[in-house]
Image 1 (tube, rainbow, N blue to C red):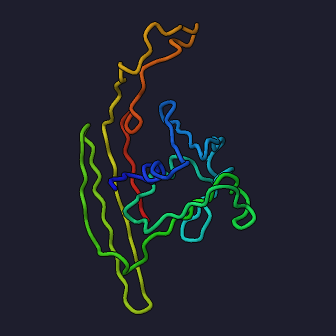
Image 2: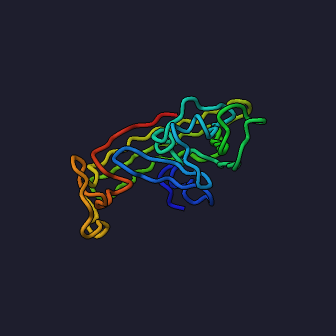
Image 3: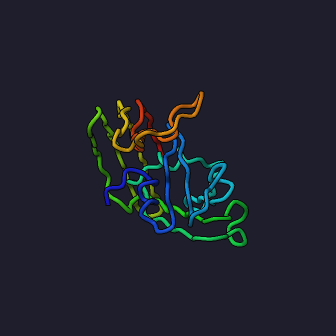
Length: 182
């Protein structure tokens, strides 16, 4: 499907939407309701049977999709079954176990000096299984604005600026680098 992270996957789910309002600020909407104040207050995120607390949007964006076997999403309140924090939805992420997937080493790249090498090592024999995932992501980022999105003759608010300004790129707004081990 070409998803780069869990946020890209969730955007394909009807009723889920992730928006980027400002630099390094994202907001998740589930069925039109904003998951205000972080995911752990209104959406329960479970990975391999373990609830994640606290969970923020950056954690979901950096969760590697290469190691995810399936994602189960339950819309609506689920606190009776899953405990507190399941007001808008429950996201259950099931990852690969050792021996379920072949080992591989991959390098991805793109514009703005973007690179992402990652390795998956999987082993399973009898009762012993092991799965290891590691990646490194680096990009110079795109810091431009889409001028065609700017409103013509936009009113100006004192000490703030134009009411409607050009959009920033959702994916890459500055230099970033991070790594993941699992």
